[in-house]
Image (cartoon, rainbow, N blue to C red; front, side, top):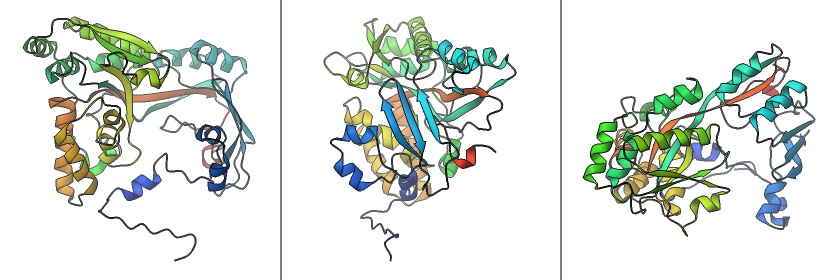
Length: 370
């Protein structure tokens, strides 16, 4: 053993240990800098970590300026400075790009791609990423306590119509909350609940639902096409007799606020490493955010979550994951998947940079000037 070697000794087996350590959020940071910061917020606004760029200036809701960390362990960064500017309006981002004010315009809705590429000096890169858009349920709401109402919500969603109309077919409807890079844990024969308005109406009749209002909380401008997607979903739900009403919120505290009834909200789920522990357990299991904020609990799912985290029996883990999908997406829905997320970035063609399949933009040496 030496000072650069770390040994982990677990009380229970963990076949996902390497994935957990390598995931986003497991970054190595400077301990002294963290301890000397006045607060978590002070440190978060100017962190000292091991990345290729350092925070030079952070102006909340305005801009973030990074400068090269020339002693970066992965080699000297290719850019001296990067400045991210927050421009909420899509048209303003595109106009700024075309006029030369910006070199990149991020988070483009698919219907704007053609308007950029009409100018031959520019191109749009991007596509699907390892993130699924979700509709999430608070089963404590009076209208959602009966799982049949939540199931009706899932069956009244024409997900492919959303992909075609709002995303120009540039993303896909995935096979539930899983990714094919799960390898042997991936269930290729699984699917999201079928679009079946007749089944949705039948479930609502059985649940004796009579059109009582169901709030749908939305954090404005958090996802591309977010408001448009919500508006389409509300119309789909209305067509089967569901009275879902959009509530726009300004921050996550308002989204989770319990002073007024919570029912449905907009969210997403990522898979930081290639195992379902990273998604369904991490977000919807007993220690996941959905249960921690009091929206959902299921005794069997929680028990299976622990087994999925600790078992080393591959066949058993696969069966456990399958059962968890059955519970969380069909029997006692915690959420329902809408579509796989996608991001699109416009830039000048003469800039040698490639979009990575993630929300983040990669400006390391290997992704610049190639």
